[in-house]
Image (tube, rainbow, N blue to C red; front, top):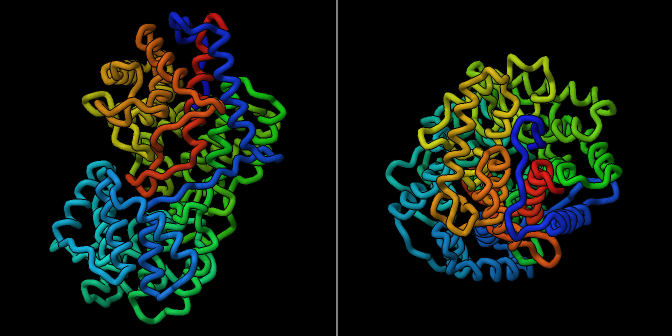
Length: 537
């Protein structure tokens, strides 16, 4: 995500009506807003906000176990506030959980579950579609919905052997056991699933800080009727992480991700070097992730970074951003850490040139591949691997210039990251040049009349998507479009220097979750790119 070679793109000029002083003030206010959220050691320890999915599962679990407490009443209040949610899945989840807590059946049938699953699948990458469909079925099943006729156990009911990262392996095991209970199945796959779930120690810990998976595990175990003490202990453990609004989050923390992306944005904006060095030192110390046993099938990424110090599961995105940040702040001081991180990244590159998110041999993804290329771009020895990765990206670009969904609801997220990855291409790489031109064209073609961009073409402009669009236009010779976008974004700044708008990050895909600072960080990154491309600042 860092700023590419300044000598390559032509410099831009500010749009009419926006002065250099105004841009500097807006950038400084936002940088101060983000800097104020860093701890003394430089880490950004932002909390994830409540989400209906986890909150509905939590209430259903408390109802199932007969848990009565003030926490339950606060949770009911949170979910009642979402009974009229514009999101159909949230509305159904909240309604079924609240009605179930009152001892009533909310209604619905197997068609409802299939319809909601179909809506979810339309926003998820194709290679996880079956997994996500069955997850929706499992969630709705524990909330009282009948299973659709096509409900089945993952993997056809066989003990799975495919390469899969820890989180997906535990999710698959929980779904297997939940659906097996509903379908009346008991076989080798369900026994293997039970072993996997018990390995997460759900009675005493929220495994890897993953609240959603903790809830699915407890529901799966509750269905067996053999682990009541574990389930009750797991509920008590969960209640320690209830949010002030009464709900529960997707994950407990993402400190490494917030610190690395926040650091990259602050660096691009010219923030205080002493702060950046503290952030980098703290992040460097977190390489490798938590020392927990891996439940992955296959060879996971190791020696990189996880999303938070409490999490063992390393991933390409966190590793790539951490590497970019450390190299940008002090490549000498962090040379050894960076070398080890680069080796960890290259170890999971696929034979097709692309990179998966977690485990070697899993499906390569365009957005993760772009992230890895960005991290490898400062290391000349990786030129052959980067060339293969760029070829993968060009091969997987859609006809309209876009890419399949990554870990963001915003279509522009993958676009801006692939565009930055293309900046690392050799000047003779005409295919990457053509790919970059198509990206710029699709970004220009989908700009809204107000100057911003929405998560998808035709949707209202939002702060995050517009920030992604601006980064892309920093590499295009389109001053009018760039000026309109920058004018729109500057007008959206709040009195405290921060920004608002709908969240774009998703997990598990395509369910959105919200860390408020993850709206501010992309905007500051965009303003930092603008700062580097202008003549007058």
